[in-house]
Image (tube, rainbow, N blue to C red; front, side):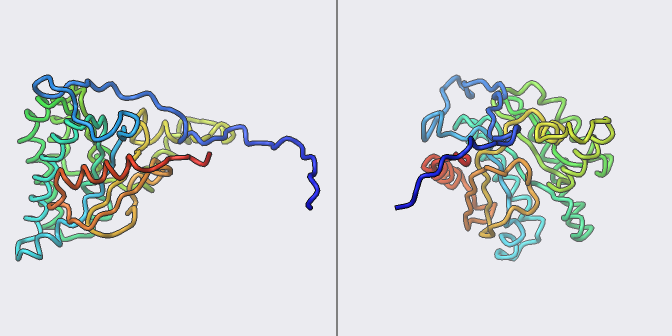
Length: 272
């Protein structure tokens, strides 16, 4: 029989557990939805994710399978967003983050990139009033200074018009890359003159595009691939991942509910 040996108390790092485990105050979100009805829930409040992030993959494949121009697939994807936003409000999801345009997407053709910019501008222009009625507030994540002036102008108008939304925060990751976000965070920290030994996880989190928001609880990726594609790489360290084969234009409210049910069935230990 092995002998039990007395051990000295375990010396733990002074900054453990990681800041990702710390509770983050909820973004104020009204519990009422349009018409005054209570949010529909599939699970208890503790089993409902505070923050859902989605990698919307498959627009181009959806269009090609139907003999359509690729931009038609992106347009169909915008319609999916419209339906999903209303459903997320009904389900009581406080924060939804959508990966709309990565910095890697600049490698696509001029026609497609210009078309994506046009779709974003049109969506913000056409949907602003409805978003405001639904209580949705828009926030953009990414290097907006690199976008065309007309696109930036549309974004600024949408941000201002929906600033009072309190039911759901919609983060649109546009001209976004997770590693670029970390680079920008490090630059902000360095330029602020923080001493190296004062840089910790909280300092980095406070310098990200998502400052002040809880990390994603659930990351959904459509289209069949199982990778992060440089999306919220810092914030998703302890997220639950849900991969499905539906192409994004086919991802309906039923598919979203299936992801929520799967999430509710998981036990999140956070290393404990």
